[in-house]
Image (cartoon, rainbow, N blue to C red; front, side):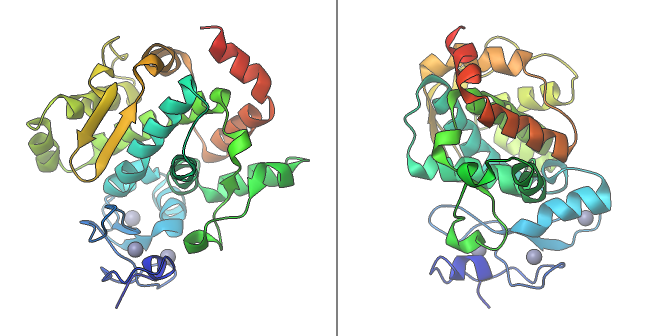
Length: 272
Ligand SMILES: [Zn+2]
Ligand SMILES: [Zn+2]
Ligand SMILES: [Zn+2]
C-alpha cells in the first residue's frame, strides 16, 4: 500500500504500516521521497507502535506524558532542523520563501506545541480568522496554518528557541549508535550535542555553539539549509535568554501572544 499523506500530494510512496490511532497507511524513515520527508514514526518510549503525523503529538502527550521530540526523535529532527533554519532567517530578515513558512507551520503543528494546542489558542483569540489561513492539502483536516504576516521577527525568535529545544530533546532521545556515527561526521552534529545539554538544563550554550551552522551547512539526510551569519548574535541572545513555557497549551498561548503583539516584539529584536 502507499502512504495516505503522500497520496494527497500526488506521490505514490510505499507505506511502513498502519497508524495505530487512525489506521491510515503511512510512510516511515528512511524516506523514499526526493525531499527526505516521511509521515509516520514508531514510538521510542517503549511501546514501539507506529503513528501518523497528526497522531504523534496526542500519543506522546496523552499516553506517555512526554513530548513528540522524546517519543519520536527522528520524526522531530526532520521538522525541527528546517524550522530552526527558517526561523533563524526570519530573525534577521523578514524575507522568507513560502516553503520556509510551511516548514515553520509544520513544525509547530506536528512537534510543538502541536495542532491541538494551536487550535485552542487561536480559537480563543478574538481575531482568529485574521491569524489562521487555509491548511495545506495533505493536512487540511487538522493543521492550523499561521499566516505569513503573523510570522514576524518577534515570533521567529520564539519559534527558533522552540525548535532548538525540540532538537536537543530529540537528539538526547535518539538511538546512541546513530548519534555516535553522526558525531564522527563532523562539527554540525556537535551543535546538536550542545542543544541536548542545553535543553536538559545540564549546561548553558557556549557563545560559539551555533557557529558551525552559520552560513550554509549540510547535515546528512536531506538537512541542507542556511542560517544567515547576521542572525548569529540575535539567535544566541534568544537561545540564552528566552524562557519557553513547559506545557503545550502554555507554549501555544505564548506563541500566539507573540503574534498579536508583533510590532512590540519586532522592536525588541531590533534593539539588540
Ligand atoms: Zn508519506
Ligand atoms: Zn493516524
Ligand atoms: Zn508510545
